[in-house]
Image (cartoon, rainbow, N blue to C red; front, side, top):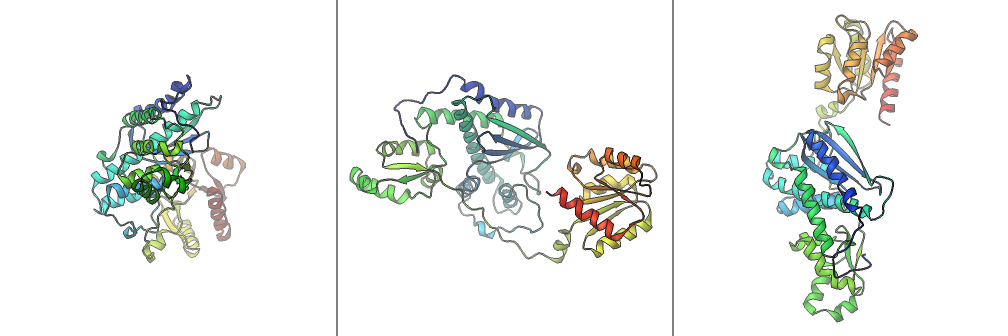
Length: 408
């Protein structure tokens, strides 16, 4: 709860502008280079936000204290008739951001219009950028040699495996930054610097409140303020701007009749999952690819892995290896060292140049088990080295061990 409220705007330290311009400067740099991927923004305080861009335009923003409350609040505001319990997901579907993924499905299944979902994204992004601006500004009040935030970029990462929404659902980062700056200035000018919009109002003295307020005001306050709704939740419920709502509570804050208290986020919604079909179950099993021109070795490995419950992808033509790997995205690759056109070292290096295969486990298969071969295999990016002839137990142990280590 804020400990003091002045009748004038709050004041800030002289070094605020330099610090608060750091985030816009860095984000605009990603915009200028038309970055596509994920930006993790980590605050020194421990708070974290994530922003997804497509060619420099904002696709999705999430993180902070209340990602679920925020998502649900804006979704129900823009789509009041939506029944979230009717949403169904595929069990085998990989999800980077469940919240954005659901919005994409709502549009693809024609449950909601792109225009409505775009409003949801815009409202959420405005809150995220406001909270970012607030956090960094408050950090400027306590100067430190440590930067108040860091940005970790992940190229090519999308918030949903189903793709991204059309251009009209994407936002300009510079406009969001300016809106957040202006909203924060208005918040400060209203004397609300110490009020956190994600905090929940609570009644501290119900009897005194009843004595000091008209009956209709008292009734409204008791009905609305239950300690389970944040300022933003209340603003949405009352169809008011959160700034206006919070300012209306200032007299009660000053009289110690109402306080602000931290509140937890809502539980992540559960969505209906249809029973997994045999086909989907099969797809969920790990896929092992083998790039090998020897049909005998291919057949031997296929029997080993299918018996052990793995799916198997044989690739006999090294020229077709990369396109097939990109298409099927295996969990593990066996790669023969000696093949026509290109050897295993060259193919391994080519695989490693692809961003999404940087961590893909790759085992070099060879009849030669010398030290020089092992060193060359490591230099080309191989994860491990397996000597022929093929031994079933050794092959399976290699896959299991490497895949467990890569998932830690």
